[in-house]
Amino acid sequence: MSSHDQKLNIKKDDLVRVISGNDKGKEGKILVVFPEKNKVIIEGVNIIKKHTRPRSQTDQGGIVSKEAPIDISKIMLICPSCHLPTRIGFKPDPNNKRNKKRICRKCGAAISNR
Image (cartoon, rainbow, N blue to C red; front, side, top):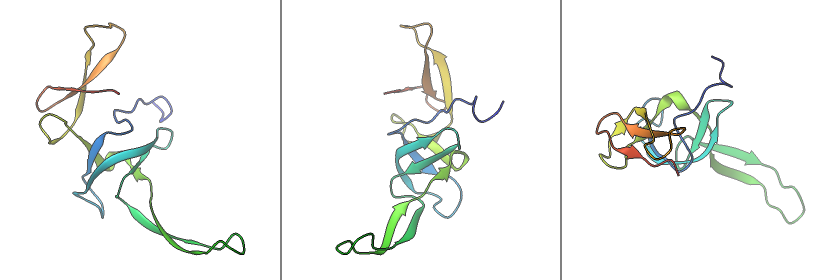
């Protein structure tokens, strides 16, 4: 299965914890998801410094801190009910047979799809 066919278990506004790398242990909310690259941008995690040059006479250049994308394999979803990092499972939605619900593998609670 190529990365283009893959369905991601993580969505925008999910609370996640970084499980490896320089930012290990940090938690934050997902701001942007890039499914084609298997990367996400998390609020306050993987901060880089970017040097910008002045674009006009009034614009000032300088050093800007911003979040850089991080690989999806380095993060874990935090369950809203048990507040622990967990893997994500799927169960058929009883109201709509065509849809699946995301569930916590630790406590079994449903994770809202928004």
